[in-house]
Image (cartoon, rainbow, N blue to C red; front, top):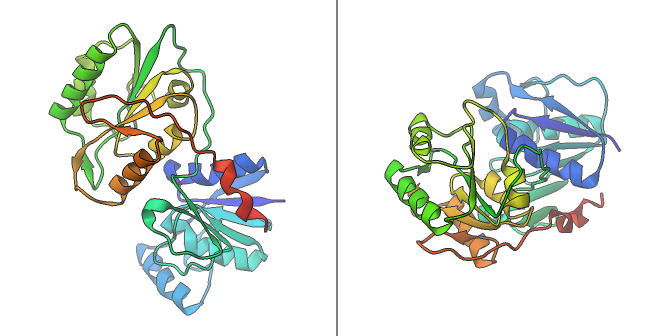
Length: 295
């Protein structure tokens, strides 16, 4: 079995495709794909509707055929169809491919995207995740972890609100070792907020681009995660031993991200911080969703 992963070079997308092949323990190659112009991406939606598939819209370098083509992200979906048809391979996508016809061989679709009921669609509660510890962090006593993300199109991290949340955490977990990490999207302003506190373990991603989050999940009693990243939350509810607490952010009251978190809270995978701490450490086993891949 040979597998081609098409990547749009966004790690949050690529990691979902990688997670699938790692659970399957199959060899794979990763190749980047880009549309030649942004207009070609718009054209691809129309051509897909018309059932027209051409490799002239995008740039990709492939020198052999594969059995499966797997991808995540809107930049990759049209190319997945084109190449799968050309190679007579199976097409698999890891998110609901909005704007394109849902006629891929297999679609893994997150529940918060409210996918239609189709035989080729496998509904999953979170982003497909495969977590591996890196050995960056080793707890020396009872510990908690904090993961700080950054602003996006929907959410904003409020300096004042984060300070109140950190004050509460420091007081509530007095005597614990506290490990904290920022992400690539954390702003300089929020980094400054963190520097005002003393933590036993600290990673400022802009200065030290490592990912200790898997180590937090495997060792910390509780992990706090800002509510801006479905990727980080998906990892936390599918790996390790930690209770998961989501720190709510300023933003739109109802959207697919808040639905995502609300659904997971209702099923016992996490707790949305409301001034109280609750133990929620139920974990998703993504291997349970692989049955639909009997292609």
